[in-house]
Length: 318
Image: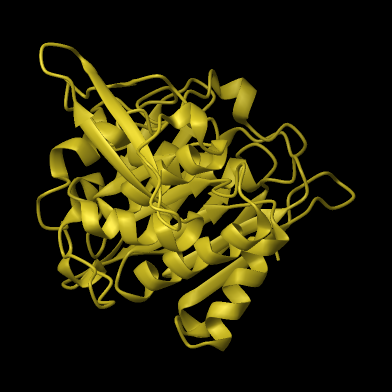
């Protein structure tokens, strides 16, 4: 688990420390630093892919040093670090980036095995068909573009983390059963995804469970159903100790569905998945409060940060 994130000289941050928890919310007004904090995490984690270091890589493309340094304090260096705790060890890993774009890295060998899934705000929604993940580089894709292919391959297999199974009666234990349980709980639908033989595409259909209607194409159900399906698939593809970061999971969701989505995240976080959410939704925040009150997750296992800017236009999350 990532226990702490430290950012100095990067974009709108002068020097901050954030305690991260099983379930962490980043909220606040626009352009106050939420996305920049997520970008700091992404910048750290994509250093695992390169010996030389990357401002532009697998998860995030930031451009040049001059574009992302904090010009308000005239930062000559960017420092980003995090504290990671696992079953056997607690350690620091960090990067320092100077004006010549030389990156000094520390302790990244230790986090190469960290399972990490990131879904950006620009996720794939309603499509006629979806792509197969033929390169097998990243099981979900940062836009969720491979989520439905992952479901097509794993639907009949056991869920990756057995402790993530919902144990309601009549809920099957395989991956597809668990996806259907949560999609039905949040939206009232179930989903089928299958590869089309001889092609590079995946066909997806939905069924409304309340009236036993026939399977229909994504175009004939609400847009939010496609958006939330790839979030559910992505989260359930993880294991204990995985880090799952998602931006604006509430896109196209009715307030009641947003609240129920927090039931899903709280359940997984209580079982060992680390979840970081960037959100603009009061319903997401209130959903977390509800889950704390109902003991689905303990208050000490959550963190909430409201990002705002001070008079100097520096981000001050509280």
